[in-house]
Amino acid sequence: MLITKIFYIVSLILPAEFQQKPLRVHWRRTLEYGVTFILIVYVIGDFRSLFGALWYLPIGLAFSQIFTNIFALTLRITLLVKRNSIYSLMLCLQDVHSNLESKMILNQRSQLMAGIFICYILPTISSSYAAILCNADPEEDLKFYLEDTFFGWSADNDWINCVVFLSIDHFTSNQEFVQTGLIVVLCWYLFRILKRIVASFMDKSQKEHDVESLYKSFLEFSETIYRCISLSEQALSLLLLIIYGFMIFSIFNVTTFLVSVNYSRLPTSMLVNQVAMLSVMITGFYFLSFQAIAVHDAAVKVKDSICDAISKSDSSDSEIKSLLLMIAEEFPTKVVATGWGLFSLKRNFLKRTTSGIVTYAILLAQIGRASSLK
Image (cartoon, rainbow, N blue to C red; front, top):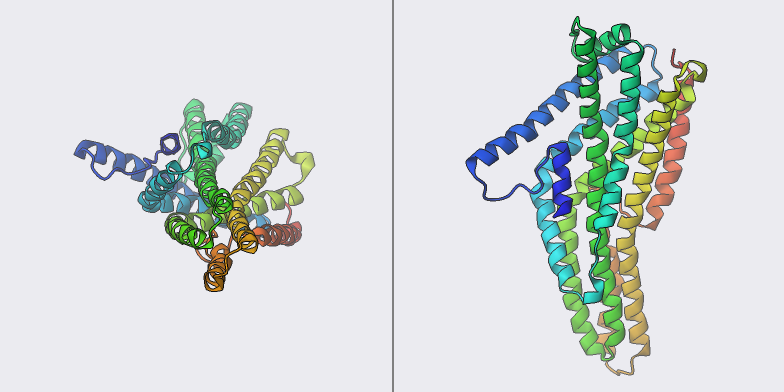
């Protein structure tokens, strides 16, 4: 499956197959955990730099950057832990979806490719900025960056410093932005399938003229959906919490930087990099949110279609009607994605988070004004 193969880009084998040759298992673990270890070392070095710069960096900028690094690292670790659950969810959704009518068959290859393309916007811009910095003043800037990142180490040869700098920039961009983008694409892909599965019952409810048959069909359908939602919560809820944390703190980070920076001393390439990051993070935030919310909206439409079918029914069995209405009313409350149970992805989620992002971004920016970047 294409959705599993795209994670090879960030050195993650999704899924981890249950039966593999010993050599392949050893190679996979070495690759995955080796990259994770390097990322941990880089994050520790970045923390060291940030704590050392607290005296002249805006508090909001340092705070948001620290949490952005934490979320980037925990995203990878969580994906390593949850990948078998994600694979089980994927198989379940595809199995249920394949049993739907032929008109429901959906080819998402083009959408997935578009998502992968968007994931590489930031790394491309970041690499361009790194190349410009490497050529501009390799002797002073690169040595300072490498010594700050690698606990005082730098090479005497400028070309070695340049190669190491570009390699580290590519690695961090891959792990922070490409990995995050691929997780957004993965969640979008799974929620899109789940939404279509939920929405499929609307057509079925219109064809059922007998209330008793509708009751039996909906009971069987709801059990299938609840099983899918349970698997989804087990596989994705913690990832959703972390991915939203990463995107929101990235937005805070860029917003604080853009408000507190001295534009007369800011290189154009760095400004383009920051604006691109803000645009991509906002796009990813709404891109994922709309798709996750659509699952709950589809459940609400199913409830409405059942209520409509009952109102048009000539059946005199009021007991079945009451029971069906009760189950239908309860259905949307259970068909909703959550961020580890801390928030529910419904329509009011976007309104609350958007106002929260704007409010806290302004607060962080105001704090950052007290000590602007030199």
